[in-house]
Length: 474
View 1 (cartoon, rainbow, N blue to C red):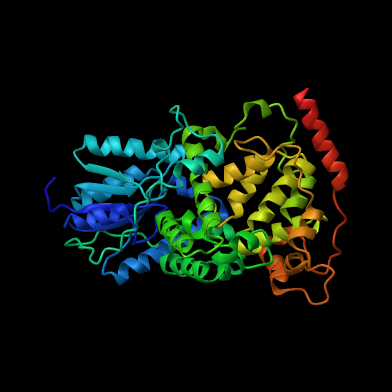
View 2 (cartoon, helix red, strand yellow):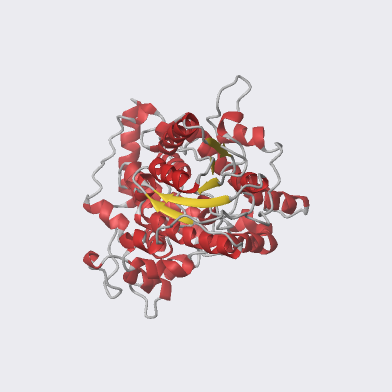
């Protein structure tokens, strides 16, 4: 390796130019920088909506790099290492830099790549940036990891968070660029079918949009965030999860914006900071107990009598937003039209599936994994296990959210329900009608259909769940 050899900056879920430690380090070296994205077997396994959204994000990053006089080189390979090796051979690159990720499959992949590259005399460096606090740096007083959120928050809330870096002013190009795949050939939108056109208007795409979204929230919404974040018909949340999931904005940027709002006395600022740390807590747990992704975090729940048939009629009614429970159905339709779901609604639909329908949380987790444009492995897993009762710091199993009383409390004027449910309305909202444009034709749904009767009695479903819970304890 010599000091003039190019550096490959391997982009993954860090689709931004500002506050990007790996990119900044490469640019600071003075060597040519070749930005790269590899569509490998791990990204190909993504569900329909997150894969489509990733493709949009990659295209936006490519545009941003072109505006800087650079390029994003695209390569597809079953194994990312194969693509990187080809690029090293073609370009003479002496280093590969990337931002760390933390799910077990990615860690195993990246560790093997780093070991191989170093063995070949290629510099391989990974950097932070997807999290504010590396999971192994947050420990209890006895040296273990945190299993409960509240002490985790107390441990990190006064920590220094590195200030965000500015975007590099110059990305020194190589003497010649390697060939690049055509993003359209990857067909990352194929599984979305006709739903892509419906969901697309709800996407806030790329780094510039992410910064604008954060700025709007801090300027206009954060003061009332603590009160409004639970009312799904109100524009009261940050909506940053979509951009954080793909790294179109960094948590550091969000944290420092929240801290400035806190210093200015904005009432909802601390609550916003706590939500950022809740995301960190999910990654902390995934790092220390990776079983949270696909197994009951509390092993004593392994014999709980959840049904695990994802094709059961009740489960399909839940997926289609046809349970006969308006709050649940509105939320499931919001998911299908926008690729996102209000957090309060996520708790309601998860409780209904795992408790009223006695269905395993993994089935709901997999559906969200298919449908969410803000899908995040750690947050999705912890959210489902928290609601189901099987996870760390979980909601007690005897806490069964009643979707009727929840609607009365958080959607008293039925504005949220009316926005998303068309049946029975003389002039349905456009978003309610969009659901029928997005969902597969073989579902056979029609806005002129009668709204269904409840598939289970709420009281009966609750009693069945609590009976099973008591029997498990005994």
